[in-house]
Image 1 (spheres, rainbow, N blue to C red):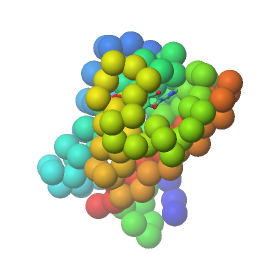
Image 2 (image 1 turned 135 degrees about the vertical axis):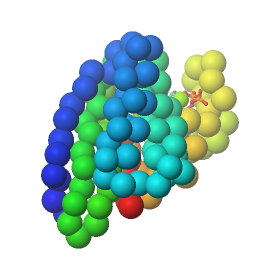
Image 3 (image 1 turned 90 degrees about the vertical axis):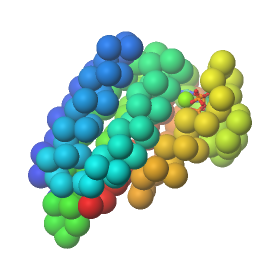
Length: 133
Ligand SMILES: Nc1ncnc2c1ncn2[C@@H]1O[C@H](COP(=O)(O)OP(=O)(O)OP(=O)(O)O)[C@@H](O)[C@H]1O
Ligand SMILES: [Mg+2]
């Protein structure tokens, strides 16, 4: 799998979340994802960006366009926040330690083709999403 283009942006504030949505839409459109798939990826990215800000204390988003053998977009959210003690539990619909509905992670996973989450307590969290064309 080859990464054609990669770019990293900061994700610390509400306005950064707006920028994430815009950048993901642009890249998804550039690689030729359908409008429906663009929207799925933007929605998933928005959930992850919000978690990065709210729980992770801010972090980064790496945007990658993939080409060969398949075309797609990969998004990697990274923070150096408190981490998630029980990832399996956190992935469950309805689980929240905040004031949300606890649907962000599970919902995001269902909107993409590949979803990987790694988290270490005291070190931080990394979530990678891929949507293929
Ligand atoms: N980057 C992160 N760092 C630390 N904890 C996280 C992170 N992302 C998610 N979590 C934990 O996982 C839980 C579930 O996240 P999820 O996005 O599914 O739900 P939520 O953010 O609580 O609510 P919703 O997304 O529906 O508004 C969070 O409540 C939080 O405890
Ligand atoms: Mg959330």
